[in-house]
Length: 98
Image 1 (cartoon, helix red, strand yellow):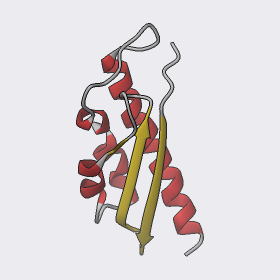
Image 2: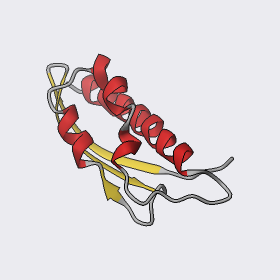
Image 3: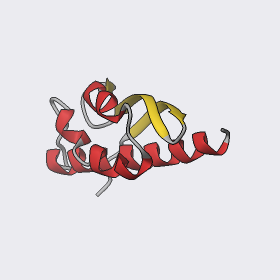
Image 4: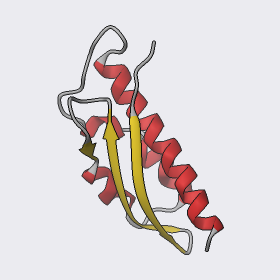
């Protein structure tokens, strides 16, 4: 199965805490979207809570694509996995320059 999703984000981390996050996702819906509810949920979070917070990132998505490559459920799941991984990498990168 090949479902292509892409996530971009801007992350502000201070003292081990996420101050703010801006998250964009494309490939799951008909157009690129911002995950604003997730952004709000991440404000004030520490690294150890990122996976729990992002687990349902796909639930925020409306009108998710379904085709021969992936079902709606798979794309929603993949959105959460992708966003979690990108956030954790960005968190580590932000911490390494502080």
